[in-house]
Image 1 (cartoon, rainbow, N blue to C red):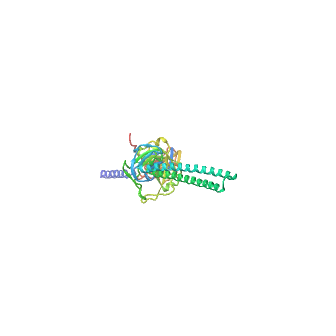
Image 2: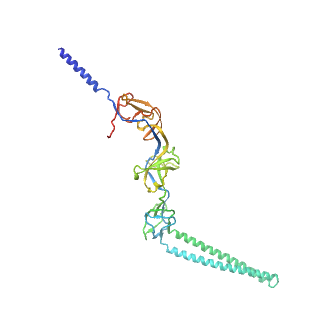
Image 3: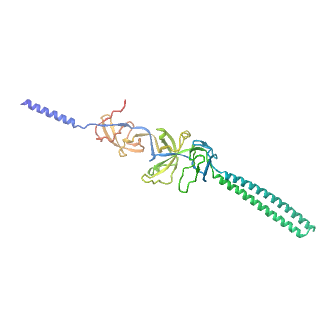
Length: 382
């Protein structure tokens, strides 16, 4: 009988011990990182992909319609300012210009002849006046000489005016001829040509955009334009440093500088309100590798804190507290802190932590609280 009672008591003790072991509080597995000194930057980034643009880009078309008679350039050609890019058939205008120049030359010659005659008439009038003073000629004869001189002067002025009109006609014809020629307004590269020899081109009707005949890009200067959320623009200033990443170059970063902030907010349906910010590239060697139209992202650096205490941003809870891991007794301590500059990676610690302390970065783990037991998660990899 006694043996049965002892056996029952033993079973009860073992069951109680098993229940206590099974229901004990298990330590929370956490990942930790150390409080260390380093650099913390405050940055803002674009909300949608930005675009690399050429500082100068001209989509050119003749101001008159006609048939393409000359196309001396090809896509990808480097051209200089003033170089002919495209010319329409203009033999009629060329002939008209030659005729106008000949007419102007004839008018100039006629004007010279009339003015020579006027000079001769003036000298004759002067001689008649001298003879009249000596009473060698009649007064009527002198009046006729003076009238002839004045008439010759008027004919000279009229001939000069006619010559000026002919010169003006040359300018009009040259301007009309200029409409048939497409001239490069700056040094650049021909990006695109819409048209072939003997095809007809027409100017764009008002309000209707048509493809340009020649798309010319200045590839010596590029900048980036990117949309920034209206909330973040207030802290951006012209001249602030920036980092640019382009999909075409992977993780490579290009140095930039803010050169312009738009004067208005873009309000596009179904999109956040943004402000376009332009960033210029700092290094000339970088510009040589760019192409207009590249998609890009930008980080504008608002503030920099060097050699300051910092922790991973994911360790900060509600902006003012962290969980510390104490390796001596494997417990968690919640502590309030004062933070400064922050970004997605790191947050500056102004007060509340010391260098070398361990903060919990897995703050979303269930059961994490002040005073609980914890164990560090094993590091991945070898």
